Image 1 (tube, one colour):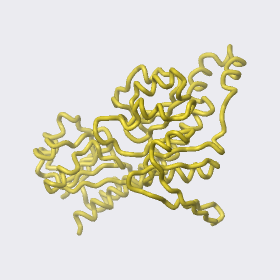
Image 2: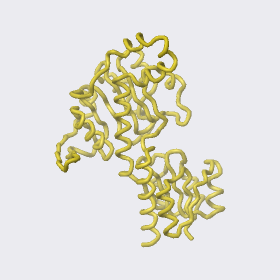
Image 3: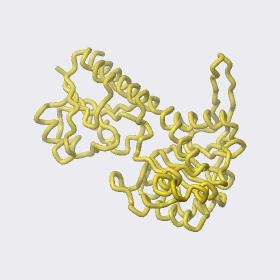
Image 4: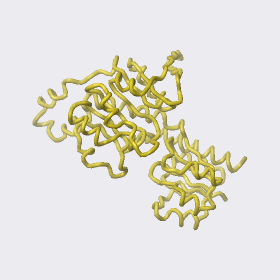
Length: 319
C-alpha cells in the first residue's frame, strides 16, 4: 500500500479521495527534527507539506522511500526542488487552487487600509464607549478605491485574479512581470456577459512611481528583499504596500521607517520575514493591517488544494 504523510494537513475532500483510491494517509504533524526518522520508520512514499514544514537536502538524501514531495499551495521555497528532481523525486504543487482566495485577501487588506479598519478594530473595544466622537473624527479621511491605481508585481495566476477584482472596482491596473509582456483579463458576469481587457506589463520602477497601492505576487529568490528602502523611495508619497506572497520580499525595517516618516500611509501584510515569530515592533505598528499567513486559508481553496494534490498522486502511481 502506498503511504502518504500530510505533515501540514490536507482537506477532508483530499483525504476522502486518497483513501477511496486505496492510499494510506497520515495527517499527524511530525516535528521538523523528527521527520527523517519518522519517514524512514514508516517508509512513506509521499510527503505533503504547506509552508511550515521544510524539505531540504538532508531529508531528500536520507529518505530513500520518498517518491513524491508535494506542496499544498504555490511557492516552493521551503523545498529544495531542483535537488529533489535531480535525485529522482517527483515534486508537485497546486498553483491554481488558491489564486482566488489570495486575491480576495489582498482586497480585504486594501479596504482595511483605506478605511482604517486595522486601527478601528483595535481601538473601538477599548475606547468606543468613552471616545466615540474622537474616534469617528480620526477615521474621517478614508479613501475610495475607485479611480485609484493598483500596481501588481508578479502577473501570474494570482496577480491576474487581483487584476480582475481591481477592474471590477473601477481601479486602474498596472502590472510588472519578468516573464509576461501582456495578459488578457476576462471578467465573467452573473448574467453570462463577458468583458476582456488586455494589460501590458511595464518596468517595476515605473509601476512603483505611478501606483497608489502596490501588491506583491512573486516568489522569494535570493537573500535580498525585492522591496528595499531604495524601492520604497520610488513609491508615491502616501501610498500603500501589500504583501500576501512571501516573507522577506519586503525590507521590514525600511517599511516601518517609511510608515513612521509618512512616506507610506499604510501597509497590509499576510507574510513576514521571521515566521512564525514576526518582529514585535512590526506587530505593534499602528499603520499596518496584519493577518497570520492565511492567504489560502478558505474552505474552498483548501478543498481545491486537497483534490488537486490527490489527483496528481493518483495519476503518478496508477499510470
